[in-house]
Image (tube, rainbow, N blue to C red; front, side, top):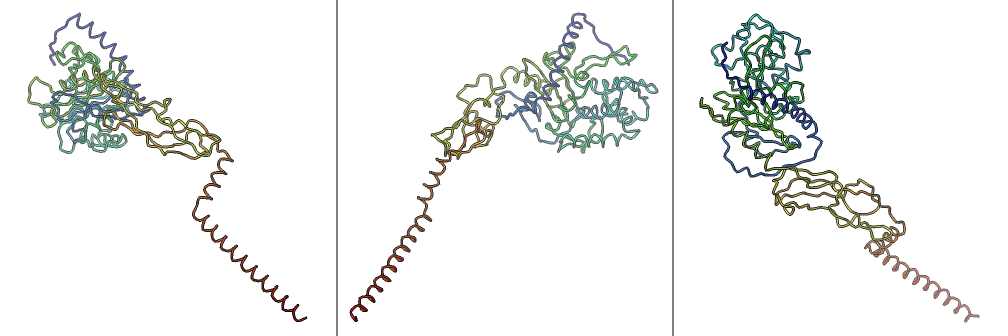
Length: 456
């Protein structure tokens, strides 16, 4: 294979420095992925205000899991070489030692790619040789080698690529992907090979937790063992030497994909000023031109998110949202209610404090006793007129019941209840009847005594 490229020392040094910085930020990204699920958040509608070439877009804040831009995110689409993210997952998890395990390159494994015009990583020049798995993984993700995908699938599948594909589909289900189905490990077009942006987000987020994935996908140039020509990334956003206008300083990885049916696709991330975003673009126009709409979209959206948006704390657990009267206490008691959890969301940096409102939904009063942590009602957080999230509001202290106050309450309830008054009236009637009967009996006896006396 003959590869011709220009070498510039200044650019080379700059590239190495940027590569080091990106590796550090990739480690930060992996930590953010793990922590994202621990933060209670919700999303609002954002005004991006720019044209988008991609048919499907998902831009999501990885610190919180909040989507800030969505377009046809649940539409089933062809993923092209974005498929190779799952291929990496299955290969890495089923090969114990990726550095020392060697796989023989066999022509019969590569034959299905003949005449397909596939993206290759040069393994067809190494037939009969044994290549380390770490080199194969770099061939898979950096140059998007379909040849590497087949070699890895054949090896892990024990000579059965379909078995490897079954493992891909099983993993997709395990990760909660409800609209994903793979039929090959490389992403060449098949009507039954499809996924969605949200499923790809789940798959990629998981892949970022695996060792080496972020490092490999953020590598612009790599030399396989024994080669004097490099593997060169297909992702111009991370290539300072070849990326041109697509290059974006804060971009990190991850994977490109292109077929006639899928259009131009890209998954990438960016980290800056403590924020991390993942951008998934699918279905950008592909007309065999030099223009890549997916890369243009991703760069513009990531810049917009990092420059114009910020994580805002809308509700905290140490700030009361309202108060409620408590009955049956020794003195008039009003209990402060606090949210059960913090509410964070992504807002425009220029948002105004008055744009955020909290509307509680609690009873006018509650009865003692109250235990710390009791859920009393809810509070809904609004940004302008859009509900962001509803959370429970709870008591943060114990309130004891006064026996005297409770007894007086019971007494009052009894005295003011209609059953009591019915019983009272019946009792009065019965007493009157009783007195009347007793009086009649006494009068009757008296009359008998008077008659008896007269006879004497």
